[in-house]
Length: 347
Image 1 (cartoon, rainbow, N blue to C red):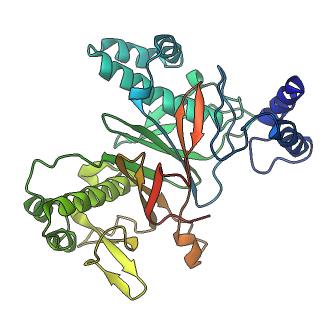
Image 2 (image 1 turned 45 degrees about the vertical axis):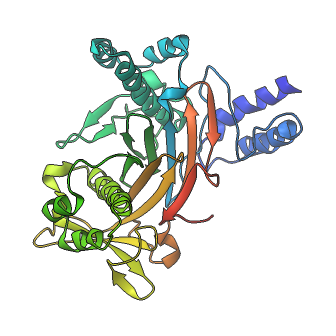
Image 3 (image 1 turned 90 degrees about the vertical axis):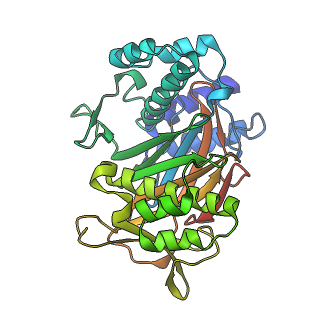
């Protein structure tokens, strides 16, 4: 029975990757669910896929973001790290080899492997992780350079990644630019927060941070705000020099309208306005803010669909996984690993 299930899984992976798949692929999926329902936890909200190959993943739906992250401290297997090296491009391998410090070397490997394996999974085995090619725009934002193929149309994927010393993340969307940022909740701020905000943030944001008399509370709200602003700049793909933090303002939108003096960035929808003569900065973006893995603040900025005006669409649908490439995926949306603060749908 397990062998039969694996045969059907192979059909599924080749024919049912994309949401418009029909016919035998969906019949295979229905049968596969039945076959595995009494045998494994494959279709549970939390699942693992031990494998030396890549399990396919459905493309994100409109207004949906997929969020993958890896915890470097959980990866210790030297054989696995050697396998990861085979996934890198020659230039990437040369760069990794040049890194002297072992911990930094491992994180450099994991960051590149996370992006390559994640994106390859959305192609239904049409592209291998090691064959993916990338280019950077003039501001340094990476994007996939798909190879033209008359027999296959590549998915319209957009991705962005972020990392700290203890977590590496990759966000994926279709047909919409994305920027993400992660920051450790316990990160210490060397500067005086009020003075720093007055110099680099908008006047409204500086005023918002100045309302917190408790230094610890102020530090947390500063980190949340920084994470949101960083995600926006990365979504624009233009770099900090082309979109300084002081040239745009993040406000909190409530039922009564816009206000900056809410009790927390977790209390209301985050909206964007540009300042002064920065008309070249688009405001057509939506934001999501959440706690990740109990240890990080994470922010997502995604380009809005211009042809949809429903209030419901202001909330982003988030699907999140903790992963170890080639070893296991753990679906963590709806668990304590992902605690929404703002902008995330409860679907």
